[in-house]
Every structure is written in C-alpha cells, then in structure tokens.
Image (cartoon, rainbow, N blue to C red; front, top):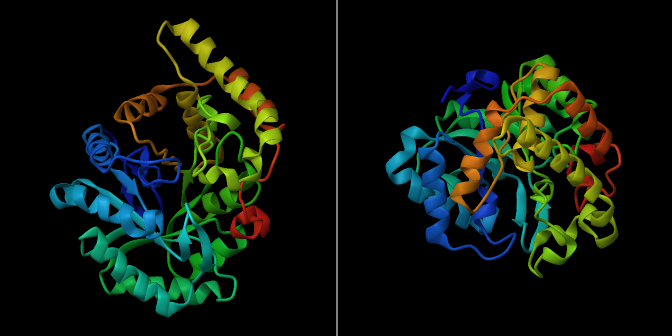
Length: 335
C-alpha cells in the first residue's frame, strides 16, 4: 500500500487506526479480540496506529504494546499527552507544562514497551501555559531521541502557527467529518499553508455516519451521552445527514453493482476534502471488528461526483448540537 507524507516528512499509511475504540468507551471490549483487530489492521496495510495516555487510563497503550512486541518496525506509532482523566470517567484537567511533558512521555514509553514514538501529540491546549513552552518541551523530546515528530490536537489556526514557529509540526489532529466541519474555516487552511498534514479523528461521526447509531442504541456507559449532538432531540434531527450519506452509498451500489457503504462514503468525502484544500488528510477511524477495517479501506478507491459532494455538503449544513462536551477544549470553542 502506497504511503502518504504528512508534514515534517512523516510517512504513514493512507488510512490510520484510532485505538480509543479498543477501550471501554463505547461499551465493553474483549482484549483478545482487540489485539486480533490490531494485527488485522497491520496485515491489511493500516500501519498508522493512534492512541493516547488517557485511553483506558493507560490500558490502550498497554494493549498496543502487545502488537509492538513483534511488529514495531511495521507501525507508525502516535500517542498523546495533556488530558488528565479518561473518556469513560471524565477529564479532570489539561496539563501542558514542561515538567508534565517530560513525565508523560516516559510513562507512555514504558506502557508501550518502546524507546521512541513516531508522532507525539499535545492532546488538548492548556491555555494556562504558553504554547511555546509546551512545544519547546516537546521539541526537547525530539532532541533526546524519544520522539521523531510532533503533532497538535484541537488547536486553533493561531496556535498552530505559534507552535510551528518553535518546531516543525507534522500533523494536526481534529474532529473532522461530514457533520463536523468547523476546522475548514481556519485550521485546515492554516495547515495547508504551513505544510502540515491533518489527521481527522471521529471521521465517521463517532459511528453515527454509518447509520448504526441511535439514541436507543447508546448503552449507559457510553461517553457519547456527554456530547450535545447525541442528545435525544439532536440525534433525531441529525438523522438527515445519515440519510444523505446512505442515499449516496445506495446510488453508488446501484451504479457499480458493488456494495458501497455509508462508512466508505463518509471517508471518501474526507479524502476529497483533502484534495480540495491541497493537503494530506489521513482519517483514523476506530473499530473493534476486523471486517470494518477492510470495509474502510474500500474508501481509498471510491470516487464521488461533484453532485454527490454537493448533496453531502447541503446535508451537513443542517447538523444540530455542538460536537464536544466542553466547547473550550476544542478549537471551535476558542476561535
């Protein structure tokens, strides 16, 4: 599978794997099945593996360490620091101070069982600390040989420019999908201007764009209950965007004779946005099921017409509800 260059000459697979789904944030997970899914991803060519120190309170990094024991050289490994807490139990703080940067990397390296991280992200912006201090400390990790490339998650365009002036930034990771498009206003153009790649998390709308999620399907421990657009009234209104994605998928199925799924359409739309804005875009959908990885890879060869893209754009304009539980913790809430 042909690799793609993000910023700072970081080479990754054209589709990544979001590891958070392999911890109990959307329900219980079988660790053996989770490891099998990871191995299948790498077998299939999805070698850009994304995790964070807070996923499963560190257990996600420990799970991925089992993969790395035999396949470290095949994987482009990304992890993150800054959030304190967990998606399942809630976040207590954000830390971007230099001392925490140095502490967090050593803890992650230990859990992952490796001596270097390919891409190290600041997970969220600690507004109490100048971003130059945080990125300066991260740059020190590159000098120390603990990290190869730096990334930022959910930063504003202004924050990205300030960080990039301290050290080259390989990637910005932000929520970006058909129903989360705020980054297109400032963040994505800034990344294109600076030569920084974009890594969209939740490219399938936390599963919603696949057409398999409803208010009644969310279990009591599902953290999506904390997100306004998953509230009962909002999720019903947002069904219109799912209907539009499904309509495009059904039309492609009828035209080609080969089954096209809503997930493939949603991912193909993101890849088309990358071409539109002129920068590398590497979505990182997560899943617990190996078969979904194969399905997602089908998006790489899917081509959407101008009319199909226009229909999806029109549906996206009607999305209801903010995309995050705390607006200040994502770029949209600070721009």
